[in-house]
Length: 116
Length: 336
Image (cartoon, rainbow over the protein chains, first blue to last red):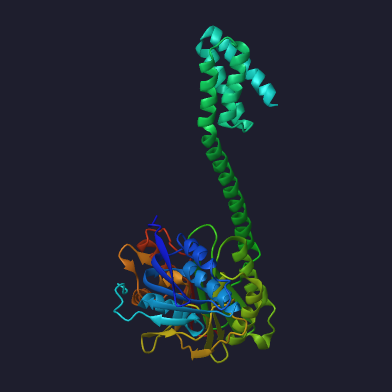
């Protein structure tokens, strides 16, 4: 079994809930992230920013967490922004069409986890 | 009942204290099973022991009784842990039951029938990584047309099986004029959006081959692009079309595209269990898959699907990390 390690840090900056996620998001670690996000998703007009620049890998379970979060926040008139996506993660958001509805920002630096 | 157990315990202990024999000790050991059967907690066993001992030897010093009270306190957390363990086992059994039901639903209710239209050779493999397959393949046949849905449901168990049944019955309910790929995805999306919870969604590719004009039309709801092998140019092209995952937004729209197939051309439709194959060295890339497909381009559709599966499964030592599904539509010369 792979290492079950995921850290989620929450900072509040100028009324924006800023989450820094570090680790791999898969079926084992996704519940941690879901729980952290669920704590704020029902706040009216929530502005959330999720920094994924330290996330190298995410599978479809992880994507499910973001979809759920996006739906809940939008329903309450809020806004979700996801930043720091590497090439692989960015492709995932593109293929799924989520980049058309969620505010997405790709990582500026070169992707260091490029396909082998 | 506890009094009855206590009385029996006292008798067995009494015999042992008198005889000191191995046999009586063994009787006691056997009797401990009854404590477990009756779910008597460790601290209660000590209480029973204390009561029995007091009835047999009330003359013992106070330190003995006090120390037994102390021991009872010591055992309380063991008891709690034991009960937690038992409740986990029960939960696990319940989940296993649900998985069995869901797998049965998948195997019987959600069965699909391979299409047969003139000039099209169809092959596919869908292999679950664990018991329940989160990938779903469903064929739809209308006279000279063969449609196929390749879907990846995020989520497991009964909810996933229900999602698949939404796809199947949604597709079965379509009238002939509604089976264009963009319509199929639009309709299934509205069904799914109403029916699933927030963190559940489906990616789905829908492709349809028309044997009258040999075109393959397709649309994608957030799914991996399919690959088209053009046998005349000997190249692969990714078939992607814009479209959001199913179940996220009720009014999502799907782009529809099409390509003409010539003899020897084929389309490979896959789930991310194929394209995101992860080996010890990292992820494989699209070229690996294209090379594999190219190796067997002249074989039948089923042989192509099996070749890709066998190769990628062996790279993972036959322990799939994700459900694996590949469907091949191959254009072959028409039979007269």
